Length: 106
Image 1: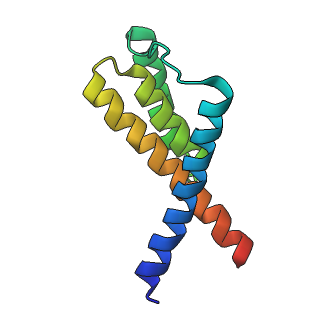
Image 2: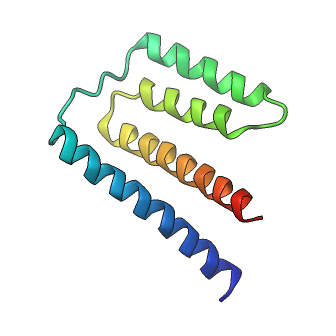
């Protein structure tokens, strides 16, 4: 197995865990259709603040990177841009989980 294949398998394991959690959420709460609650000048201010915090971070941490992505999502009112930001949030979370799993097996 190549390193790239191993990384793909690790990511698929994390995504399977996320999928299982989503199924548990639906079983517990049913389908959720809350409003986005995003956009507006206040949320843009928080997104700018989070970006500044992340840029000033030495060293970068997953927590700070995730914080920046979450606040950027919170600032979006355009549905396509919001979706893109949420995909970035999810990707950072998956990457962070992969690192935690690698630490466990190291």
